[in-house]
Image (cartoon, rainbow, N blue to C red; front, side, top):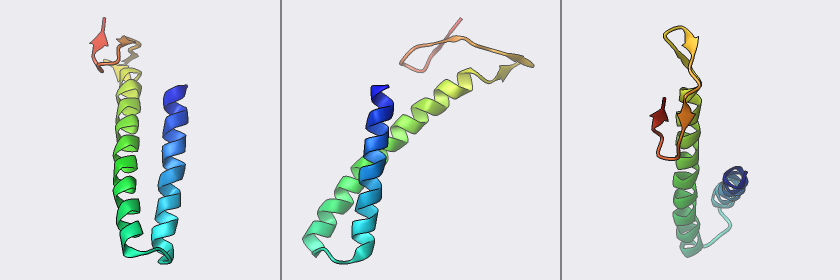
Length: 79
C-alpha cells in the first residue's frame, strides 16, 4: 500500500504545482524550480502507472481464458 500512498501524494503535489504555475503569481526562478519538481513528479507517477498496467495485463484473458500467472517485481510472468 505504500506505493499507492506515494503515488497519491505525488499526484496531489503535482496538481498543486500546476495550480501555482497557472496562477502566474510566483517569480520566474520559483516557476523554474516548480516546473523541474513537476517534471520529476510526473515521471514518478508515470512509472507507477506503467507498473500497474503491467500487473493488469497479467490478469487479462489468454486464449479465451483468464490467466492468473504469478507476478514478480521485474514484470516477468511466471508459470
